[in-house]
Image (cartoon, rainbow, N blue to C red; front, side, top):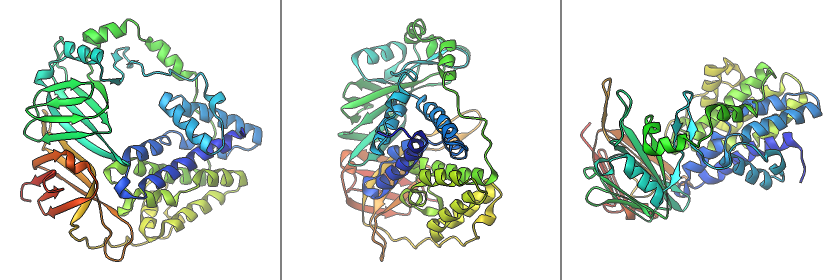
Length: 452
């Protein structure tokens, strides 16, 4: 396999955008988690890529590409695995470059004070026993339920607030236990049945009849006092010290010291904002009402284009690239591109102002496929009160004259009813959508709100 490292770096960006486009093409098989993963890689790796592209001299560019790729791979074993897989698809072998980076298994980590925090772990007899010893599971309360489509599968996550059995320091926040379940086979949730939890290797049960069943369940603990628990004290005795953890991070420095020309920075900032929008695709926050597939298509091949623009070493190359992205965006995305340039780079003159397209008048679809649904319990602190919240994402049939299915989001505060049954996770079913209620699959998913 070729060892053109700057080409490999560009190919990873191109592969990310290809994955997003393919994954988002059919809303009925939407996978927000995969889109998030593919876009999240570039949160702190886009500027290193641009710095590589703008480096003069092939040997300097390759040396900087090596540093940039190792920096990217230092963010955990799952990141390195993703890099190896995607680079191989593009014809590159990064295994020799990434060998020996970081810890290869999930480990508890230490914060800046040296206190240990737990790693996510599979639900097993031992992990369940440890949690029972440190937390009062019988008094736990469901704070959040979410189900999310991942292609043909459905995943779920649950969050519980749970009292501690051990003594915490000072006025401690509540401890939160989260369970992440893959390939859900059964679910039953009622918003008024949320107290008590029983953890098992095949899923979670709570209340009188609540349950989520799945073959793969993993537990994470969010508790700033966990280092005082029995499990935390045991881990602290063997976990790497804070100095060792910091030394591991410092072993792979980030690519710095190559200032970008303003036009290159403008292109980098625009693409970074697009990646942030795509990262939030699971929440349907794509700009201007467009889909993640449309946004990713605008920047398709961006890695190769950035390297080519940098190699031309002239001031107008990146400005031309930004204009070409705006042209691909068309009427739907050009206003967002212009607004982004104006807000973050003061370069709105690169893209002519354009009116935002008027959103089509929506109908009342009578069938849909569930993409995701979430319920968050009401919360109260000393400074604010948050009512219960729900968010439902649906894939609904095309509007008249359109060819593609589309995503539809229904989200409000002040939930009055939320019921979810297994049948709602299946394919297309009947939908009854009113101003203050939603019913999918004849009662399998029921959400209602108080009057506006």
